[in-house]
Amino acid sequence: MIGVSTTTAQLRGAIPWESPQPLGLARVPIGIDVHTGSAFCFDPFQAYQRGIVTDPVMLVLGSKGSGKSTLVKSLAVRMAAHGYLVRHIDPKGEGHPLASYFGVDAVRPGRVIINPFDGLSSGDRGRMGIALVGAALNRLLTPVEAAAVTAAAAHSEHLNLELLAERLAAPGDLHSPLVITARDVRDLIAGLHTLGSSSAGRMMFGDSTVTVDAAAPYLGVDLSGHDDDTLRVLMVAVVGWITGLWGTDRLRPKVVIMDEFWRLLTDRATAEWAKHAFKMSREHGASYIAVLQHLGDLRSVDEDARAIARGLLADSETRIVYRQPPDQAAALGELIGLTTEEISTVQRLVPGQALWRVGGRSTVVEH
Image (cartoon, rainbow, N blue to C red; front, side, top):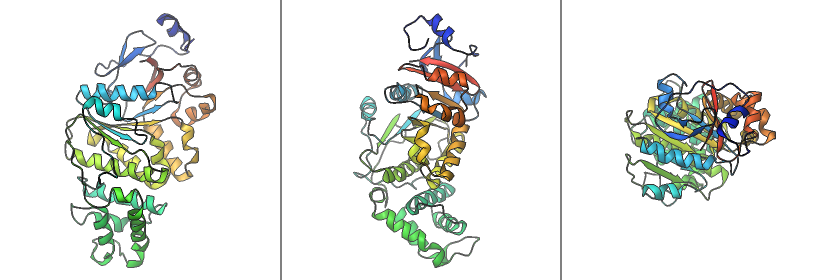
């Protein structure tokens, strides 16, 4: 049985499904495939290019002490060694050992300002504005409001939140297929003022005051010490800022590690932004690694956002699941499609072991 000290051959017999065909990927070493006893390697873009999965997004689930954090850190180091640009969104401030390993300091919004619009395309500037204003208002924008933000964001390539508020204050100057009045933008301006006076807003109003090496193998952003609402908004802003740093580089592979991913799914405005970021992963040459403890983290999410979350989880074809408690069984089946046998196996894993479900293939990997 998994969880008992046994030989590799005995471990293979403990898995209640037939041994899958090996993935045949040979780039980033992960650990040992319990089915075969051989080395297990994985690369999200290699898997995508070979048609094993339809996108390079990865989902990592694991309780505290399961080995999840160790995997994430080892992925960062090993993927960087294989040419990936690793970007780490770190709400708990646990990534400083990684930053030290790479010889860099983590970026800390608050000490510096990050402009979430830097380097984004016109369309992405509009989506970023819609997500941030929607988060500030705690609701979805109306079609006219969304059109106003989109038009204001497209006005010129240089944009920050202060300029966005100024442009919205002159709706007659906006170029939009819809007629936009002062009444239409009233809530938007109020939301931006609310955001600007918040702790999150003070970290991203104005132009960026931090300079980083866009080609550095590792960049960590420490978001620790903030409340839930602030973290949610900051995580959206940081994803945009990181995306802008890539510019038009589509050749070098990137990976964005998003710890505490569930926070982005706590309302529909930020969940929509996450959905768009994942959708654009192939175009940007980026693999997103969404990390969370339990799918039960989504129970507190409103129904509209939960629907988006279900879609995101269903679309993530690389699922790495560490030991989960019995009360998570239903969610594992409903939200990420694990079979009864796979759920049973997940509940019996020991620290350092995970079920890897890649496309339609499953195996247990020990690292």
